[in-house]
Image (tube, rainbow, N blue to C red; front, side, top):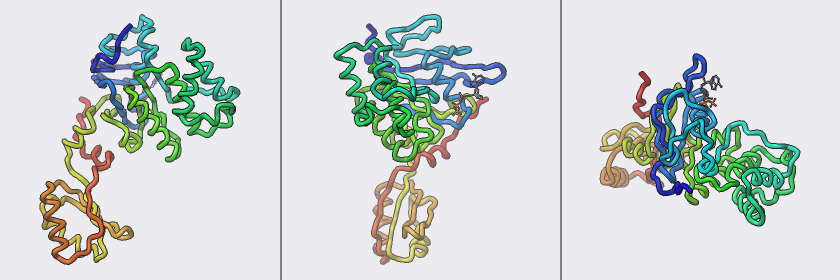
Length: 320
Ligand code: ATP
């Protein structure tokens, strides 16, 4: 049996490309995903995310290039049963069977993976609890909300206890609450040690979740890095100042201070948002000076830049 946890890289691709007739869907992708990561794959519609994920899942053969799962080369003329059993793949359009109950649906898939009693029953209970669908176990799938259906799909994807999850746009079309619920489940799965690749065309869906992000454009992987590295490369923070006084007068002072880049006055919130790249000392100096100048400051804090803003600053490698 392969001990997948022993290796550092859960997924690696080298020069991976996929050509459909005249359409080059994925171009020379070199991807590395470390074991235990939540890797966010971001890109607009048509960027090649689905095609890449299908190749990683071993169901779409690359035109050229190599794929490795836990250091083992994936060969498309081989079944790879031991490794495939450890993979969970959630496609973006997987059908649910409306006439089945939640329990019967999961039971069906568990049996496909040869789960046997009493383990089967225990596992179903476990995943139902994880995806918060215990109360729906006897409900017909046709009666579930969109968010519940998506959580059920996730339950089906993990029923056989995979260690590598490939999730294609799992939160697309969900309302904010359902997205949040889904993200919380992903966090639990990561804490349980799974390596997870999750795609989305919306960056903010993945911001709080991912340890690394990859950005696809026109089939190319134009960026791929740990989130912490990106934040380090672009150390600018957002500094929030709220005050009781006339914020326009306060804002006029700002350009004199070290570390202040641009700023925006949010009049209704009585708040100024500053793009700040200074040190801790620069921050202390700014706060002290504003107070000494008589401004009544009610809030003064920094927060990490939104991933969207960070993304706009990235110096994308352009495909040649
Ligand atoms: P979306 O977010 O819309 O799903 P995506 O980033 O997942 O987009 P893909 O679905 O991988 O992108 O598509 C990448 C490109 O490959 C698109 O131009 C698409 O039209 C093309 N493509 C994908 N599958 C096929 C196919 N089976 N035959 C021909 N062209 C295809």
